[in-house]
Image (cartoon, rainbow, N blue to C red; front, side, top):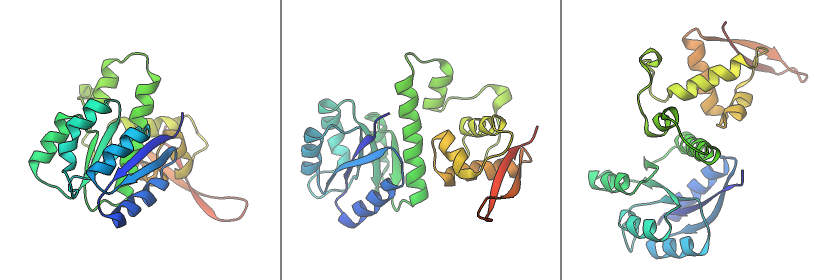
Length: 226
C-alpha cells in the first residue's frame, strides 16, 4: 500500500508544526503540503493529489466548514478530518452532512492524534481491500450493533472489534508477544496495542511474563489465556 498523502490546513503555524510532528509518528502517512488559510487550502488541493485533509475551522479568510461543499464538488474522493477548537453544534452538523471522517477538538494530544490516524488507516485499508461489503463490514464502519452474544460493557477507548483482533493475534502466537509486535500486526501504534493488551490482562483474559532478551533488558510479553 502506498503512503497516504496528507495536507494540513491550519492558520496557526505552531499548531501546524505540532501536528506535522505527530504525523511523523504514523507509519505510511506522508505530508505533502501545509496551508495557513482557505485560499491556500484550495490551491494545495488542486496542485497535489492528496488522500486526506486535516482541516481547521477558524481560518482568517473563510471558515473551514464553509469550504466543505466546494471541496466535495471539486475533490470528491478526498477524506477529511476536522481538527478545531470549534465546539458549536452547527460545525459538527456540517461535518456530518459532508461526510467528514472524524472531528477532533483542540488541544489534541499526540496519543489521540496517532490513534485517530491509525484507525483511519485501518478503515481505508479495509475498504481498499474489499471488492464488496457485507453487514459485518458495514457495522464496523458505521458503528452498528454487534450480535447480542457479542455485546460487552467496554470502557472508553476499547473498541470491541479491535479487542477481538488483539485476542486473535495472541492466540496465533502462543509463545507470547510484546506490545510493539502486536501493534505491528494490528496496524496500530505500540501505545494503542498496549492499552488493549493491558485491558485483556485486567479482565483475566491474558497474562504477562517478564522475559529477558540477549542484552539482558526485561520485556513484557503478553500471552492469551486458553
